Length: 325
Image (tube, rainbow, N blue to C red; front, top):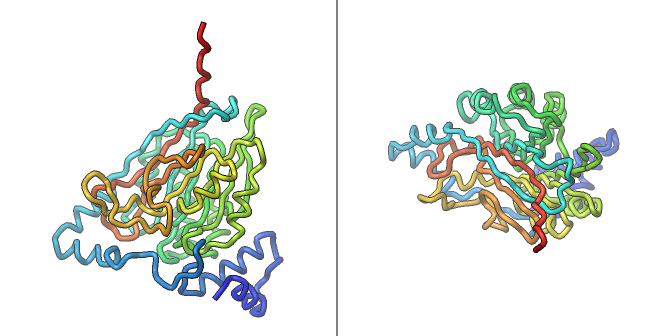
């Protein structure tokens, strides 16, 4: 099975390919969602990305009497504040702040959105980004996702708005409702933020862990030369492509940091096909800096040794070294 065959089948089914600029993306995504396979950079995979150990985690924790503690851990939400230094950051963006959320998995935890809004009530940022997995295996409904996203957007203080990308759990039907709720999605698309004569380019691609297409490579590689740029990708699995294209910063999630980890935060399972060393926290690939969020929500409802996080990133111009007198 290959993507070209899926695209041809979709066209024969009469799906609207050119009703809007996203028509080809929508047609292909819908066809891929109808398959049980994962479409990855390494080809079509029949196996699930989820380990049997992860699937059994909740029942085993219930039997051991640890499930309630695991849920309490999942609701202990903190803000990780990170300063990142760049030699090529436009001076007008020195101090620019990005509030990064990932893996909301709305309605998997009680009152999660209310807890997030309360936690960031006094946090001011220039931009907010959400790196995918609004849903869990396509649940809840697009209307429910949009309602929760709308409450989150209304509670944020982000001057340049909210950008997002889709994750492997998200279905194509949530796109319009999410955008109506105030989340501008980048579906293999680019935008730019302009301030004081300086520009930051932002590239967002569709999920590549389950719904990879070569378009993700093309869009990441089409970064404007000389422009400081940010890549938003649900998982870290495109870090090599983004770094080779010259992106300065890469933000992702997907792994939940492992969610159930050994003491010290060492993940037992990352849900990554590649680049597993990038499963959590700050990292670097060549000259590109990256951050993989542990996420705010959960698939399986318990966490151990891996607290959820909201990330507040502050971009700084790298100090120019003083010349010796």
